Length: 626
Image (tube, rainbow, N blue to C red; front, side, top):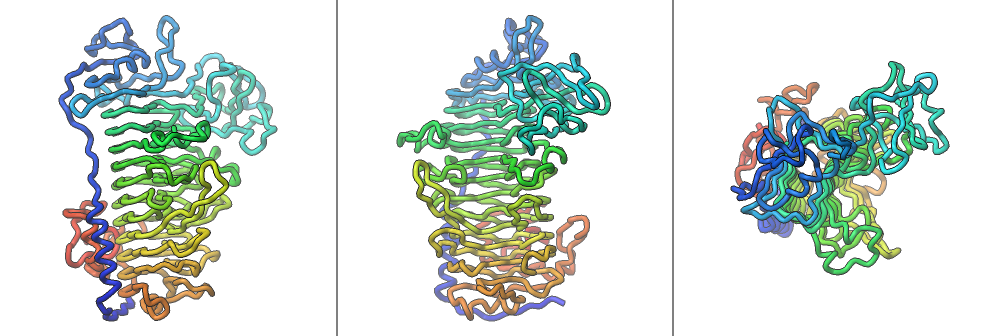
């Protein structure tokens, strides 16, 4: 039985606030950067591992060979193409023994809108993308048996990273991860490895290991002061795609980015944030990256169960896409992101080294991405975190966030989170347990060069028309960990479909948990709850009292500045809940049951994750429109 409680509201102060709130979003609308399309006047150069740097490189029949030669040709208007099916590793050499691999360097590479710099692939699409890898590839020859189930191979004693190891694409567990005193004698399982004194030791029960790669904290792509650059159709292995300010009009499209040590793509202003620079100049503080487009990539850290699950007290870290402290306008769309140790997509100002002097992260659209934790046992789907005024006017919409373990942070100010699908939030074995789809829960962060802490910001936030299903904890939690309370305010939670929440007795049996220290105003209306529990929310109660939909809709009795109405409970009648088809079937009570007051913020012509248009007068509740 669906319970619907409807009460007529007076039109006045609160309705006016909502109208002004939506007007702010309309006036602060985001212009989404588009990949640059231009008729460059430069030259196209071709590269193959079977080429020669003495060739002119202007034809697939006369390709050049080395990454260093490619770097020299990355000039305005030029296009550099790598041969599909070829692979450049950091230690790849030519017939003369000269290194042909390395990092694609884009420091001070100044393309223009008319003459951009393009890096891509050529050859048959049936072949694999060209590999640009900063992993150290160990020869298949030269392995020596070193005891039961253990093999060893010589490696350079210095100059290469030994942070991770892969055998035939599968990551292995370094034995001193848990025990600092462990060494090569402890390698006795097929998933273990160690490196010491110019040797690498790998466990194997099937003979000498093959296709072994060592990984350090490296960068297959590095850019700083780069402008109008496109990187597309490459397989980038072994490190982070690093985009440093000041840079602009950067497009990263249709690449595979995998087997990183930490992050997949990182965009930041290193000059101001690095520990090596304790007193940045104002010019350094003012730098940022603008018009960044990250689309259609597969970004995968590639964990194995053994590497990631062996020590629940160790933090592995890493973000799939990390926009940090200094970004103006961006589009993150159509990416598949998985297997990171901290977050899928993060817009942070500033989790790492808080300061309100940096530019911030503004006007970024995140949409149509598929984000999950894979074999990682601790990952936030996303994080939007901000110091006052520093993470603003960003949009997170029509994404599929699923099978992750740690709450996605909703913060900053004037940010919109709508039409997203959340499914399968489980509880991590690690100490920090927050198995929620989303939370609004700011905390204080340290100021650079000071012992002072600054409170993060969470206000004027818009959490609307999301579908949230199967969470071990709450679907949405609202808290205030700041030193000064009262700034978690103007939070709109509306038209969300919240189902099958809290399968763990350690949490209150509710889909929405708003804690008692939260004193700011909230709008909670037209949400639908579906669960075996009759209770749906805790609403600012200091005694952890929970309420059903009738009690939630009566929140204004106690909190007269808040708006709580038209919240309902019932079965959404999904097309196929067991197989995660969250479309509403024809008899769903939530079709055309939402409020249309928020649609102006979506923009004209908006469609959901599956391309369904939005009913401008009677939208359905949840992320997927009928």
